[in-house]
Amino acid sequence: MNTQIAQKNYIKIIAIAIFLLIGIAASIASVCMGSAVFNVQESLKAIFVADDSAARLIIWNVRLPRIIGGGMVGICLSLAGCLLQGVMRNHLASPSTIGVTSGASFIAYLTLVVFPHLFYLLPIGAILGAFITTLGIYLLAFEKGVSPVKMILSGMAVAAVFGAFNDIIRSFFPDRIFNATGFLVGSLNGVAWKHIQLIFPYVVIGIIICLFLPSKMNILMLGDEMSNSLGVRTEQFRFLLIIVSSLLSGAAISISGLINFVGLIVPHIARLIVGSDYKYLLPASITLGYSLVVLCDLIGRTILPIGEISVSIVISFIGAPFFLYLLRSKSTN
Amino acid sequence: MYFGFKDVTIKYGKNLVVEDVNIDFPKGKTTTIIGSNGCGKSSLLKTIPRVVVPDKGEVFFCDKPIRKYNPKELAKRIAYLPQVHQSPSDIDVKTLVSYGRYPHKKFTGGLTKSDRAVIEEIIEITGLTHLSDRVLTTLSGGERQRAWIAMIICQQPEILVLDEPITYLDIGYQLEVMEMIKSLGERLNITIVMVLHDINLAARYSHHLISIENHHVHIQDSPRVMMNEENLNKIFRIGAQIHEDKKNNCPFIIPEKAIN
Image (cartoon, rainbow over all chains, first blue to last red; front, side):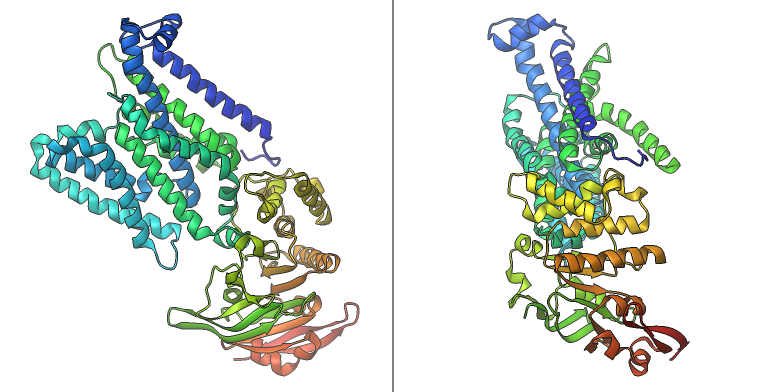
């Protein structure tokens, strides 16, 4: 958007409403469609009436938690990516920048490949692993405060080290690697209500953030000197945002495994459509994140005659062409 | 002390930037800090938004070190404009100016009626009314700088600190912005502290000049007293003709030769 006059605010609100509608439509379609197809009436009955019908069994126990869980994963990852792209003042930042991916995947290798009898520790291990790795990267980059550049570089170094550890594990346990595939290629297969309980508090945190933080985020975008002089405790705020992002993405990863592109491309697309004002960018990222994951999971479940493609793969297939498109449109700007 | 530096020493690692700086900025007047590149003027100013922390000494405001103030409360009284600006590429003028009201924001609130009134008034005073919906990056250098200054004026400060506000501007825009700063200072009765590179503009628009040279404060005095041959030799290492600008009632110099 290279026009002289700024985009009107009501257009941004309409865009957010459209994202929301896409999410609702995708949710309804996801409830009805799959290996067994139900119409809307049957589906509604299955949700609200607890009987022994096949519809109830499938929809209530399998599809609904999968949709809601997937949507929450989308919300958490998009929100984390949105916050991090702001904190790092770098539009290429994503949860993997702060080491969440490295930490969680290392825990996955430990609990699924090296000590498979400890598999039940994976969800909580992933969150802890992600969080501790983020803290570690922050402390490594700390010197009277943390500059975004130092943090990014420090994250890259840590990712390299963890990658090396993972490679060692792979070479020692070559026959057990497939245990970890379900985690490393993120998927919503098997998401149940108990997972929803785990991730729900983080979604609530996320929504609260959307209500109270936009103006502070906007000030942060003006640079450290400016935000300090406007009254923001910049260093503290940055730390808070990094920790929150780590927990949000850790929670998401613990349910679905690694879904790499969501945290990166959703805030990007949202920014292209509603602009950089966090008052609109945060709700846009959340609604778009929900919709994208639910939609891609639906596609993954229904596109093959038998079996499914995991949501992470579908999102990657959408993500790569998108990146190429972005690259092209930026170079012509 | 109303506003100033007390025994401030700044070091970057082992390198000394400035040492034992004691300045008491005169209230209600415009003071400009001048000196050659790298002498520490910007670093000194950066201690005010606490981006640089002095190794020794403190910045004082109303007899209290500024680190003892709540940041938001301080932001309602001291405004600072850095040399280099960062902003999102799609921001419009009105939104940028509205960010200056942040220190006055209540916890849950957005912009109140009185916030909007202040923003409208300041956009008018700074001559930005016809530009308020424009994207910032499409404005001229002078217009953009006016927008940034409008933003910090929205903080309704009693002190304005400007780090090289006109260094990157064409000469026409330099004058436009300096005139605006001057009229804002008079109209709103605020204390202004600036760092400027241009000696003549510094002389014309300041009541008080401070020079920094060789890591120390060299001279603090009015432009007329300070602008003599000896000082120009020492501070800027030039020999120059010194004339009187009768219209603007200030000295001005014509540089003649470099002295090494």
